[in-house]
Length: 433
Image 1 (tube, rainbow, N blue to C red):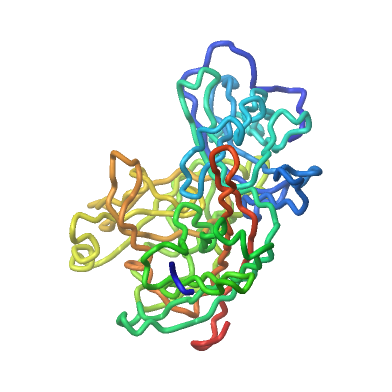
Image 2: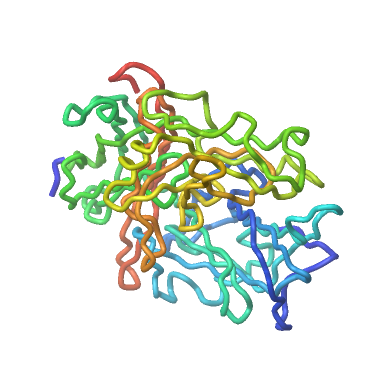
């Protein structure tokens, strides 16, 4: 142990008719109610003794676009997961009668739009209480056809029962074991007040997410062997979960596609500022903490653009960054900060730079480049390095969200989230918070 949803008369996706071919899903976004800037976190302040909500709270919005000749018959299934995002095979936790939406609401695209034909905006729990989230914790959803033979997309969100007071402090710190600039770190502490000290055995884990990187948490666990994490406060009625080696990274690069004159519809986007370069030792202006701004662009301006991302660098730098079989990937809110094989950069002789093309809805995006190894078996990029091309500086401002997990002993044991706290770093001197 350490010391430490809107019904629209023009169409619904439902029934069991034939599934259209060549269905393309684009622009998946997940947020709370109508505010696309919010984190996909549903917070509940009152629950009964069984952990179920006593009243209706905010709803999760799942929005996406479909390019198809006719509306496909889609459904969304929801799954409760443990703290490691593995789906719980527990019918008591994920009620099979209240975990699937068979009727999805959509509207057709505006005239003249080519990138999609139908826009889906649905909110959950729905008005008819068909879908509901009885227990807090990590949740995933999967968008698929009615026969579940094809899955088009999936995403993550959180349901939180705010039962234990949680505060988060972020301190700019130096890690002397590392060389510059990797010695500039953020020290993050989450202070959790327990309802009773005797229940402390069930409160062993806090996960901390930097900005919107929901696939890459920092974990602090009572029983881990990480030399950079501590858990303190035993026998005091509280726990202090601390991690000391979080690299702040750099401010994200910003892609602004709002100017229709500069970037007209139906034309390839080449960034007016030119190709991107490595930023190991220099910083840029403020970003949006990983958010994307999309819904303010409507009508014809809600169409999709093909964007050419270009990263220019010397050959020696490329060899150094990709040593050991690593490759370079593009990441941003358009892939939920979770790059895939489709986001890999490749050398383009004509462009004389490393490029990747993405079809993106018009909007404003934060993005950056990472290195890593694509693993076919897991379908993920392993050994990701978020600072190799971007650098790191504790003057970078980040939002850190901490989730407190409670291992509920009922139903054979399952993970709930019973506390949430948020802290923001400041571009000040070391030791400030």
